[in-house]
Amino acid sequence: MNASAAGSTGSSGQIVVAGAGYAGLHVALRLTAKLHGHPVMELTLVDQHDYHQALTELPRVAGGTRAADAVRLPLQDILATRVRFVQTEINGFDLAGRRLLTGAGPIGWTRLVLTLGSRPNDFAIPGLAQRALSLYSADDAERVWAAVSKALTAAAAAAAPGRQRRLATVVVGGGGATGVELAGELAEILPEVASGHGLATDRPAVQLVEAGPTILAGSSPQLIDKATRILSDLGVQVRTNATIAAATEDGFLLKDGQLVEGGVFVWAGGLKAPDLVADSELPTGYNGRVKVDRYLRVLDHPEIYVAGDLASVTDPRTGHVLPPLAQAALEEGETVARNLDAELKGRPLEAFTFHDKGFVVSVGTRRGVADIAGITTGGRLTHLLKDAIEWEYRQSVRHLRGWDPVAR
Ligand SMILES: Cc1cc2nc3c(=O)[nH]c(=O)nc-3n(C[C@H](O)[C@H](O)[C@H](O)COP(=O)(O)OP(=O)(O)OC[C@H]3O[C@@H](n4cnc5c(N)ncnc54)[C@H](O)[C@@H]3O)c2cc1C
Image (cartoon, rainbow, N blue to C red):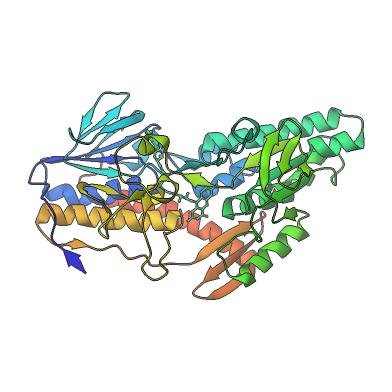
């Protein structure tokens, strides 16, 4: 169903996209072509990095099977000259003055698109932020792999088998898709890496600690069962109903008093909106995500659109807020680009509808599990499917750039 635009961007002005992740980059690429007929409408993309990060590939970087630079895609290779790119950190918002506050000074907008993604959420668990690594950027993934390599080196230098075992154990907190992918990747790769360090191949271990009754909560029981079997086959020790109460020097302390020891700790147990959004006057809901109407405009701020992890979008079919997924970010980015174009052309706006293409998780370097159209699959072909999705995404980014009629 459609609605009229609340206001018009007019024939001139500035569209500013804040964040060059999955949603923001998609908006910028799609709008570039659409704005061809509006030479006086400027498009600015702002990000703290001069590269786009293929976050779905981070578990491979953290597992040492992919270089961090391979998941940092330089924006200058992706964006056409038509887009003005500003590399700077966004510090806040002047909503009344319609300005983005950044390290490079204020940037005024006629329309703002907020696509700032998520941050790891430590739920104020004592010690977690200090003791555990996170996995939400290429830098994070590099840190995880460096810590794993360092721990294995330390384990090889230790004399007592017990100490070797403890140092060579990676503990992952959070049994969602990120935790499962990381645990699987490491479990598959660590025996070989350990042997390179002169350690016995059975010395390393991976533990996956999940507070809820199951890993991959929200997925079908069949998918959960298949993923659990593969993890078990890889030697991952999965602990469910295990709530982390604190992270100490000795390890993750569970609510029931047990201590989970290890040499490397990674937290993949939750996400929240960036703090600068919480500090703004934007209306926020669960986990600080920004509340939007069905056209993806901020409630009471029709001049600001939000897409991706930052948007709190309820799926009318389920009544639940959509999960933070690249798939949803891309679809929302598409609707935002269309609606901005509609505003420019005086056409009615389009309500967002999520078309669920399914859920695919890699478990280890060779196998995966998926729920697609009500059918659960698992095994090597499913891992290839995940590879294909990631390859297709990279191709689509190039292809979208190719749509720009005035591309370099
Ligand atoms: C390890 C991992 C694996 C994942 N695997 C999958 C998967 O298999 N399938 C799937 O669908 N989803 C997956 N996801 C989720 C998916 O990556 C996110 O849902 C998606 O990235 C959200 O897109 P976004 O555009 O909202 O945010 P992002 O892609 O995170 O982009 C946000 C952008 O904003 C920029 N930014 C943020 N704050 C500032 C600031 N203050 N100043 C300047 N710039 C700023 C960042 O640099 C970044 O470029 C995974 C996520 C992780 C971490």
